[in-house]
Image (tube, rainbow, N blue to C red; front, side, top):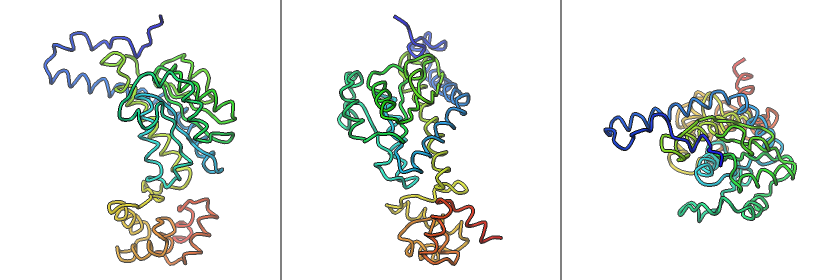
Length: 297
């Protein structure tokens, strides 16, 4: 049997059970920080993944996520944030999680070994040619995730494989391999730790790059935010106020005219009519930067 690096004993783990609590805590933190550094060599691959995802979404396709267990949870955490943060319709960013909603409350290992679940989930997500699927598995060998990757490629989708094991089947069988070589865990095999942290950081990079490419990020603001609660409505008003250079009252009035959409509200607050604002954004591909530059010229 081949022992994966994620299953090996961490060099700082010997005698872990007998360490003073403060020393143990320091070693856990150090191991997590070391794992995060494994993301840096993967930046070129993450850029490639983000470009593929942005192109799929720009063309009306999907950017799906797939995973099981801890890797699936990391994928789910990123996936669920995209509609709120960047205003992406939920059906454009489907999640394929081994075991579905029931497994979120009572995670069992068996579901990650079931290819039939993968086939049903990819059918439900509607993955097809022109889509991108981000497939995550720390081991790179989870049957559920490998089946999703295989079926997605067969349907003409671009598959991004994100794994923490070099030479794994997922990395070998995908279109865009992303190796996060985090090595042994401080608790051997517990890939919710270093591997999971690195996966989440990698997904943060991809989603921010995708959001920026689609024009949903401007000066670090989420300008396509879905403002569906008090906190986010206040955030939307602050964004409009800052980018348009107006006070709170004018920002709220502009948001009222735009139906709560931040990007057109910024243009409305700067003197553009609602329909003209929508037309200008359509012409710029949803990017505020060239429109604000025109006003400032």
